[in-house]
Image (cartoon, rainbow, N blue to C red; front, side, top):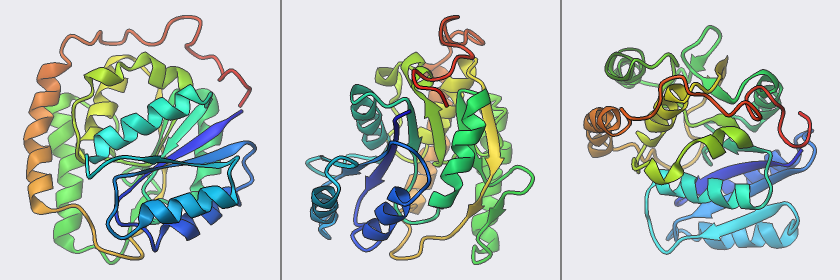
Length: 258
């Protein structure tokens, strides 16, 4: 089973070497790393190229001409991973807020569903104790109240960026119809997955605050995410509720057994 971890980067030169080393050390057979870099001014792209030269069979780099947004970075990474034959695609941040050691648990859970979410808001999930009460309240409200109320989402961590997807699940989603390009991209993917009837399971994770550098989650990004939730609802009304995967794919393992 080929597993590809898609990692979008922008100014993550200090985090990336340690992250890639941790990923390649995991006890996961045929694991690959795809770095999608948006021409980071701190040289992240060059760092990624050096890592790829060290592990040319396992580390790939997709260079983009500028800062084009998280959503399009993930979609570009998903497309390249699928084209390369990935059976499972994992998405995660580059700043260690998502722990590489949780990946085996995501893969284990994927044996019985289509999408696994590393969740902060299910039993056992935790947030970094260094978060301010305001940041915690805003995150909880966005996930537990706002997105769930407007979109009827069942997933508790709608903005989660740590997910494992079966190949068949991503193939069922029309990636051309995913227009969100900030952190609300995660909400749109969760909503479309639910509308399609994909089986989604949340497993608890500890969400650590980034180790190096500053958060890219600015106030304008948060405000944009709030109003775009309504846009997601409008644009995806026509997605068949509960249509699910074709019979040949639903409930089946990837082309190489999990």
